[in-house]
Amino acid sequence: MTPETPRPEPAEPNTAAENLDDDHYPAYTMGRAAEMLGTTAAFLRTLDDAKLIEPQRSAGGHRRYSRIQLRLAARVRTLIDEGVGLDAACRIVTLEDQLDEARSLNTQVPPPSDTPDEPFPPLRSL
Image (cartoon, rainbow, N blue to C red; front, side, top):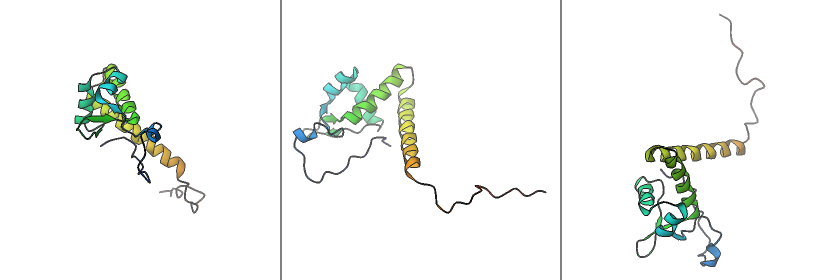
């Protein structure tokens, strides 16, 4: 279960320069990602083991992280720094993302046009 946003499939391969603004492009090595987050490579590996973040691999098998993945890791790190356990932090972040997605879907879907004036039928007396 990964709360990451699915990456849209590109129409044609991008050059490195075209990927500079792509939040899904795995531009950061594990060492650089850990440095940016102020954490260790072991922390990033635990997020991979927990299946919260699944980094892409380079041709040599090294983990590569995108900006979206780093934002997700930073949210988990903040919760852990506040005393929340790793499993709970991963679950909280997952649920927050699911709630945001549901809210977004609710604002996009118009209500059915054939709804009655009254949302429920009137109650009958006994």
